[in-house]
Image: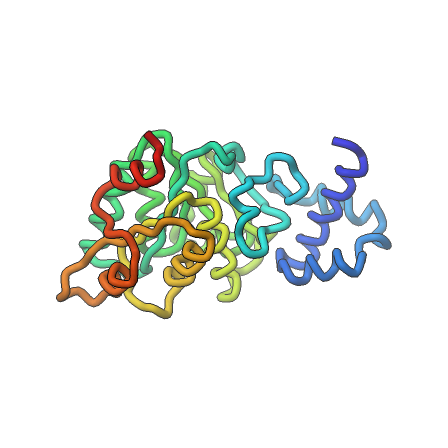
Length: 265
């Protein structure tokens, strides 16, 4: 890497830290060439202060999948195995409600446990379906990527601390937000676009409301033509799964259906 590229990369990381990962503020700073007058020593100090590692839009190994989403993150902060972001990996996302039924739990565990051993689950480490999916991937001895809506050094929610540490050390933990930034409601839709961007397909075991983060992920998947698989539910259950299917989502049957759809064979 040339010194120019290296300096540009560090400047980008500096701005991401300065503006707490806010894409709009970082982009505005770049457009105004704010970084030109920043002393090199200041940039280097911020860069060296990071506990985690980074991958930027300028890096050759930045995933092409992410470049197809709206406002691809300029910097990702991470811990773990960055090779899991490679475009040749088999990836699928699982998203769903924080409050799930026994049926939603069973669907999540069944599908994740049946997925190929060389596939990678992507989810958001949130309460509910996300957490279940990560845990089942670990039980199934498959790899997983957790995308945070908080700073990379802030485990949210705190009850997922053990899961956070396991993924951090043995899999891949990423965030658009540096350090220990507190979660902000506005950050979670931004987090969802990364989950969708990294996933070749989106699996929805249970969604309880059209006004939810899961629906944000579904709409993002539609915008970049990712296939969406939704578990069918009984008419006696209070979910919107069947409504999504009637609107065109694929009926989720089993893991083999997803494998065949994505031509992983």
